[in-house]
Amino acid sequence: MPQMAPLSWLILFFMFSILFLFSMAKMFFSKMNLSFTYTPANKTETKSPLTWKW
Image 1 (cartoon, rainbow, N blue to C red):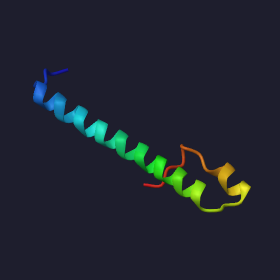
Image 2: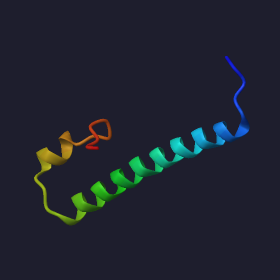
Image 3: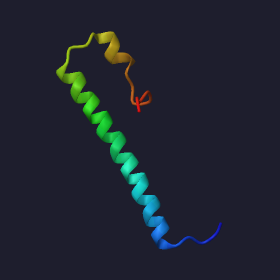
């Protein structure tokens, strides 16, 4: 594995953290929308964090 510069590691970490924060924010906002809008029980059971809508 070739040696990478610290700047490239920083950029990689920055990109992954942005992706992680973006997915967490999407999940948080979808839960907020679910709690504020009425949905039947069977629809809320089928929703899982594995089926994210990008």
